[in-house]
Every structure is written in C-alpha cells, then in structure tokens.
Image (cartoon, rainbow, N blue to C red):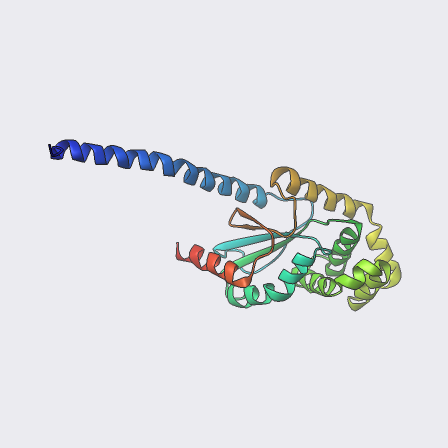
Length: 218
C-alpha cells in the first residue's frame, strides 16, 4: 500500500530534523572553538606582537615558529613571499609572527631578532628572514652566526652578548611559549591560526591560497 502523503511528509521532516541534529553540533562546536581560540590569541602576551599587514584586514594569520625548524624555514622561503604579495600587501591578511623556540639556539636567535628590531615589526621580519636563511650555520656555529647577523643590524659583539643574556627577555619569551602550549595547545612548529582555526605543520601555498580565498568569499 502506498504511504499516505501526509505521513510521507512527516517522515521526511523527521529525517531532516535528525540530519540537522547530527550535523549542527559538530559545526557549532568547531565555530565555538575557533572563536575561543581567536579570543585567546587576541589577548596581550608578554612580548609585543610582531605583525605586518592592515590592522583591520578580514583575515588574521598567527604563526608560531622556531628559527631552528626546517619546516618553518621552508615556509619562510617558499610560501611567505607569495602570501605577502597576494594577501598581506593587498590588505587582505594581517600576519603575526610569534616565537615558539624548540631549543636554546632558537631562543637565542629569537632574542636577537627582538633586539635587532627594537620594536619595529618590518625590521623584525627582516631579521628572522635572515636567520632562517642562516639556519645551517646557526645550528653549527651559533655564537658566530648570531654576531654576524647582529652586525648586519648595527649591533656590536657586546650588544649581541648582552641581548642573548637578557634574562628578562628570556623570561617573557618563555612565558609566551608556555601560554601557547597550555592555552592554545601549540606543540609543534609551524602551527598556524587562521581566524582562530588551528592548522599544524607546513602548508604549500596552493593549500593556503585555497583556504584564504574561501574565507574571503564568506
């Protein structure tokens, strides 16, 4: 016997309600998690953020990286220039670089970049770019490499030594790393937060480009 139309409509409605009930909670949970992460990331940390791009850009990318991380160096060399050209310089993305040193050599290099920049974000990015390019020498001949990079920014040997021995700066670096680990669950580099969504590991530009283009369409 054919199913009566009113009953058929009721069954379809029930199925739709069930589907919505199944799909919405995970989606809502994901959105809530991203919103909470974005709020945590926006909180002031011990060290001032080093950021480039328009402050009111529709997309904010926060990268946690280590200057001794090969995947971070690869992103810096092969992905970041295209990201900057297509999205940062055009006002679509604000990019924030935060330190997550994986070892004492990375910590010393991050401290040097901070000292070299003296609060100037473009100068900080210039310093970290140079340090990433010198990653091999940084690992093998740390002191000499730090002094050579510091010299490029007008720092003499005494200034470099004072910088990497600055306990107050190291304490702030450590506090920010602990916050990232405890609150944002950062446990590897690079880790990215794109409008609060956490993405672990290196990304090809094509993958990043696709994600950013989709966000800009919303």
